[in-house]
Length: 522
Image (tube, rainbow, N blue to C red):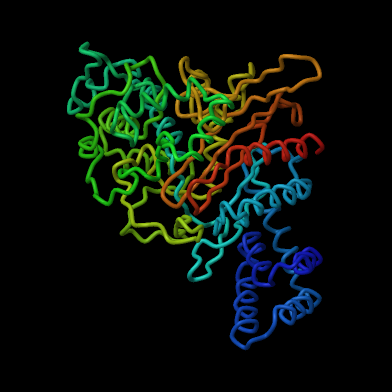
């Protein structure tokens, strides 16, 4: 580890940055690393010391034992993680994933330092066969106060809130308290009955889960949404693009482009809603964009309506119901984003201004969209959630489950959650379809010696000052472990970041495959 720190210094990274990069390795190592970081900052900035001198100082420090201390702390953390993870196979050894960690860290650092993104900080977590093998913070949770990201950093998870909500819906269905195919007015009479093109239509909870309800997203103008959908279906050909470029050069007007979500007014709401029922006022009287059940239209507002259904079916406030589920799953750092509440290790949030500079994000109140994008969490909690669903999904493949604990969801429920739904699509991964608040990519190989597509599920998130992804790559086949099949088997990856508008699904998939290859070598 000491040699690796020296190597980073030799590559031109400042000593302070090197220390920050390693600050997420272990809770025991963090105090020492933070003291090193503060000392370097004082000596290299406060006293006018050159970067080369401070680098030389760090060389000496590493020689005196910092590397050994960090390595020892990492070893202790790895052993503790393995010991505390329930039901893991002995073959899962964190030390066997060092190569995958190095490769994946390099991928994430490219995102962090790229000109286009310039993400101040991120946290990554990876588990293999239910055991966390890597959790690290890179960069800063708070740029102004130079607070480094660590595995404990709490960030906005944005639309990963949707899979959390879908798990709560699934449990209520199992308990017989909620029926997915009942009209939403059965539970929420405050939501008016809808018509489309003069005919009365029915919206169900099943449609809400798969974005087939026709309820708008952040764009209020139904005609604009339909026009953009039509353009997406009829992609502009290269020749037409060249014609438009010629017209633009000749001074002719170019067609107006679709606004991004972050340019829409509702993304920056500051009003506080005291209940999910009250939040319905934002959109409940607006016309439907499409006929329910016919067309996929991603809608966070649809999940606000779903949260009202959950609240009435559970007979307790939505946030109370979700809090009880989080406690049951052991997700103790997953909470609604209440601005006035003190939440330890909470990150600050950033975006790039028109000049490409990193600036603070404006204040927002997410009480209008708890279910669709209003929760905070940590990488560790999201890994736990992903593994709980993977366990529930894989137990359906076992004939003999004697001596095994039941899954968080019943086998048929877990299967349904990850089964693609007709007429759906997903913008962040063209290989997949949407299921019940999850993207699902099914296994496929069309031709011999050509691309073989693995089965995986994921969800991404984008919010003011935040980007996120949670991806689950199940093992291709279940293997025996000491005569029994041990669950879960596969890789779960999550990345949470305090910069908006960053696509993370492809990176998460690359990391998952990297760890899966290492898993097969164990």
